[in-house]
Image (cartoon, rainbow, N blue to C red; front, top):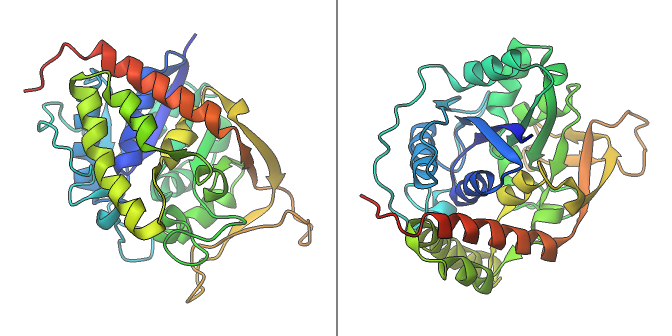
Length: 320
């Protein structure tokens, strides 16, 4: 039986790839998508999520707009990384699927209350929606089967400041709430996502399948590749969120350690920093299962295989 899945996203190129990977994976049953302000504004992200779902043939999946700003800080987007509309050079038809009338946090809670203990949540954006859900429903850790969070830089430099990863930097207070709760999420930090570099060769293998899905992946990642070449001096792109998504059905792609992780909320230079006490100096119980190693070749092979298969299944379709 497929694993019931919720996605909380800020699409974003790599979020879009994560959505497509979910649709391409028979182990998963995507039940709903909630959107948070992050890579782009929430309204744009909600349009992107619906357009990507339509591209993958799943207009039936409800999409709800959640928080449109962080809890306490002003919004911060990443349009220089993901393009002015969040999907690089890709242009998708305006989604015909209406936005869900519920707020994203309400939709998330409705889903988990309907099936307590069965759903896995993968959060690939800032954690504002999840923090609000925890405040509204203290039982949320018990209502979820599992929670996977893409965020943090534990033993490597950040990607927006010397110490902070983007999702935690956008809303450090939300990240603090999540990592102070009983969720104990599977944390997927830059420490592992930066080891799984998706190269032009990987993307060419998907593009060779032809059709609208392959064309979208090519156009979206062309922008992403250019950004990483200019700003990170790497020949490829980091598909952080796709790795986090893959762990919902292939958790053995990573090795993990239970560790106390706290998030700095107020530092002028360190807001959003994830502090992982691997040495146990604070003597506090673990708050996360942190991914510390990744089988990058296996993940990238899986990613290419799944998206290539999805592209082939839709290759005969013409986009309006």
